Image (cartoon, rainbow, N blue to C red; front, side, top):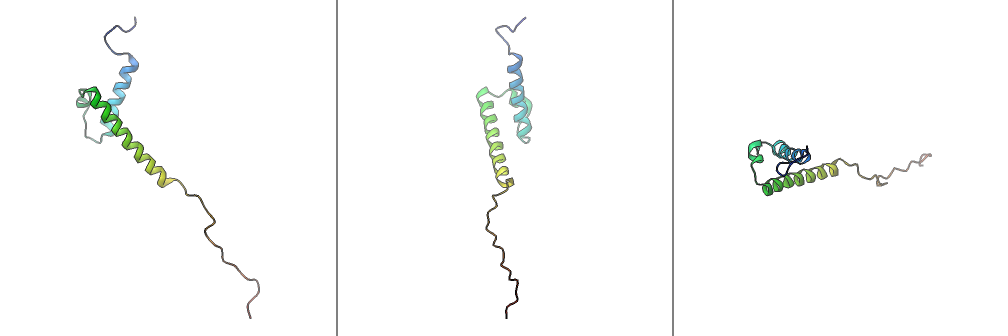
Length: 86
């Protein structure tokens, strides 16, 4: 028997609960499950998108710091002479 008019599909419920989990988990203690579950949908989506943007920006900054820079031939090697100067 398929889902009726009322109720959410399994996929939709999974998305909602994943979103609630991410807000609670990555919110660094600022949110509890019950508060996020009872948030208006627009506010929960706004909060989720703000957290996502924050962590994406943080990841970009970490990638910038951790990527090796191009090695250019900026180091000049000293010239050595084989004969002693007189």
